[in-house]
Length: 213
Image 1 (tube, one colour):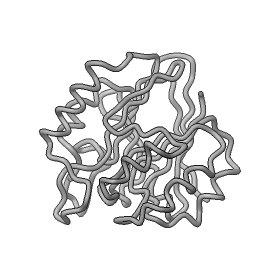
Image 2 (tube, helix red, strand yellow):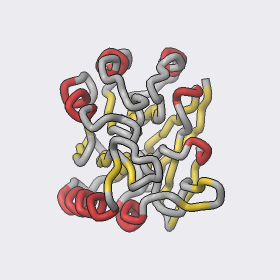
Image 3 (spheres, one colour):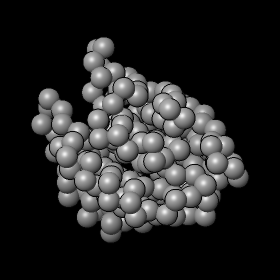
Image 4 (cartoon, helix red, strand yellow):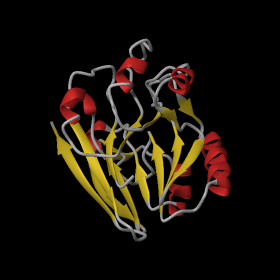
C-alpha cells in the first residue's frame, strides 16, 4: 500500500462517491461522519463500492451503533484499534471531543487520552505511523470563528505519529505541519472533496494532494 484515498464527512450524502473511483489508489480511509445521525442501513453497501481495502472510523454525527455496522462490513473498523500494513501502521480513534451540540459520538478528553495511550503503547512502530481520527488536534486545522476546537488529548499524542488524518471542521480543509507531524483535513466528501496520500519508502516521505470531484 503506497497510495491512499482519504475521505471524510459524507454525512449520508453519497452522490459524489462514484467520481472518486476514477483515481488510482491502493486503499481508502474514511475519517468519520459517514452518516448524518443515521440511518445506518446504507453504510455497508456504500463501503462495498470500493474495490480496494477500506479502513474507517465513526465521527461525532454517527450513531454509536455504527461501530458494529463497520465491524460487520467489508471495511476494517479502526475505532480504538490499529493495524500494520507493510511499512504503514494505521491507528484509529472515532468520535470527537465534546461539542456544544451534544452529538451522538462524543468523548471526554480523558477518554481520548486513555485510548490513545493504550494504542500508542501497543501499536507496531513503523516507517510511516498514521493516526486516523475524526477530531483534529488542538490548534491544527481546528478553527471555528477564530476559536480552536480541536482535541487537547490528540494534540498531546500526535508526536507519536508522522501523519494525522482528521476531519470534523468542514471549513478547515487543508494541510499543515506541527512539530514535524503532517496534518490533513480532506474536506467534506459530501461536497466532492478528498485527498490522495502517497507514502514513500523512507520515513517522513509522505506527499498529500487535496482533490475535488
